[in-house]
Length: 279
Image (cartoon, rainbow, N blue to C red; front, side, top):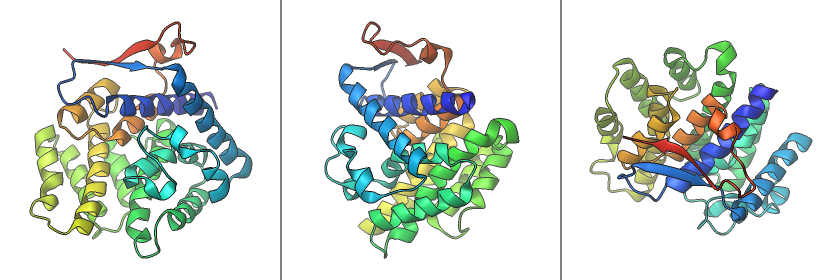
């Protein structure tokens, strides 16, 4: 239980790092995570979401909406669930569900499918459902990884690919991620390879699907290429100009809370902690 709690704390702070660094650009030298008093309500509401999931083991749209998503999610996102800009944002919002149901894949799948039907029209739900499932399945695999060896790159991606249709956009890109990791490909090669389908794409609907799958594929690559180094994972995604918030979440869950985070004070006496830095 202590390990899961540590990983949950890592997920929370990884999410804050992703939000804090998202708009800082690619010339970042030293990044600081500032926990302002205004963020306390975000933590409180997120904890309410988690408590709700624990108590009910289910998802009810009305109760979920009553938790005021605009206080839980990054600033600038207004409106109801359907106003989320991308699949990845929705997946990150459901991180607590993946943490809690990591050992019950059938129930996790059931809840993801139920949520997808609420968030998307029936015609578009299948494509989005696959993307949503993969992020949450990856989180569950990482939580199980210490004991079962799932986090070894040689085992992680094949397990992820088992959940995907081989001919889907995300399935193809995740297959490329596996090949890139095996080849020890550099960052530029990975970005060029994974971005190739977007070149010359003029259909907005198809481009949107590719963008969603690209963000997930890059997040998996960033995480698997440097799983033990949270700072490097975040900095590489920043400098590539494609910060994937999911890479922060995956890496921080894998590491759990670092010692610096364990002694971090949330009462305002210490309002910042250097988490990411580069020479």
